[in-house]
Length: 114
Image (cartoon, rainbow, N blue to C red; front, side):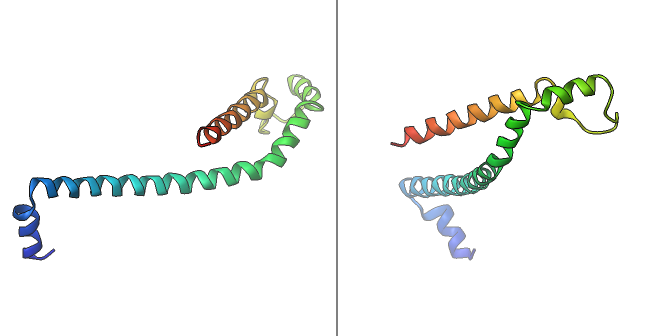
């Protein structure tokens, strides 16, 4: 910034003009934040949509072989070093609840705009 620009910003702006400049700075910050949040949300929604088919497979598994695998795990039939958090009693259930709550929140937000 030139000396003239610095001088104008310090001494020449009226309090009314300073208020206008402050408003623009605040609105600029809000617009930048909104753009970043919207970009992140758009990416997250795309990932959520891409997950739907696999999540349906997980639900089908929970309703079919999960119980058998859960019991086999309790009998020690799987290697102890194999990741198997999916066999936890609440793992898939908690994901189902989260999925339902997210869909309800998206619906609520969509209805709010109508």
